Length: 368
Image (cartoon, rainbow, N blue to C red; front, side, top):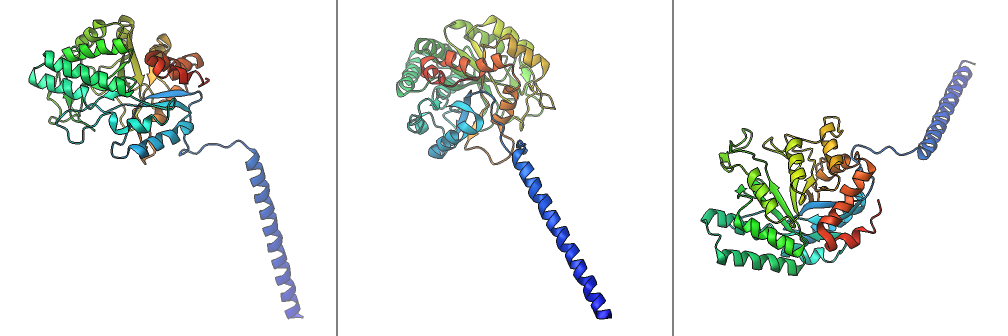
């Protein structure tokens, strides 16, 4: 009898366990069904695309892997909701090993018309300017070689001149500095106007001569920086038909690329345009986003005051780095906060206006 009682208790315990297991399985199944019907919440690692199409007007590629870079950029278009990606050539000098220009990737880019495009001159025209500054020679022979090279790039199919620089701190390429009103910059403005191609210019804002910011090292950077804003305005005024894009708004390492300076220059020079960049790994001193990720009020006001004068240029590199912080993503999160009419202009319409027939026919099919 005692063995029978034990057996009965054991049987009942196993039955209770089985019933509980079945109930738990049913609960999980119902939860999974409900989850499949609920909207999917993106994880922190999933990309957030632009809410309307945009052109990535300033990107870079791996010169050691042009084919892989193009493949990566093409794959990114859909993930980002980008209508087009424009590659820029990093500004360089003749002394820097590994210098290159558009030719290294041009054939690959041309396989994807309307999706990829490229500027040129960062590794040649810019190097010519830096050499001219160093030697003091900007005479007729130097100017002829400069013009010949610019026109060669145009014949080969670049859609602009860039990335050029007037003040560039040491990084992927060496420290570089040149007066923005240097004779070769003025000549480039004339050539840009003649061919209706823009100039993309990287330039730290230096309103007056100043010491190198304390968080930067000298060498390799210069211990003192020369004023460049007045010379920049002379470049802008030299040929008003030359469209000049001042790169990297949001990546300010002198502290002087302020809302007030940008507003004054935009008011004074109708041929000036600006790229918006947001880099979570290297926030500039006048960063357009607050700590909570929202656009700062003063920057939003500037974007809405001049909706025809900004483009998206995140400075993203392809293939994309493996870390989670990506420039395009932070820039798109800013872009998504803009009013819809402003977003439409900054996303695609301004690029079509600045670059003209090089890109405009393709962007008409990118509906916002």
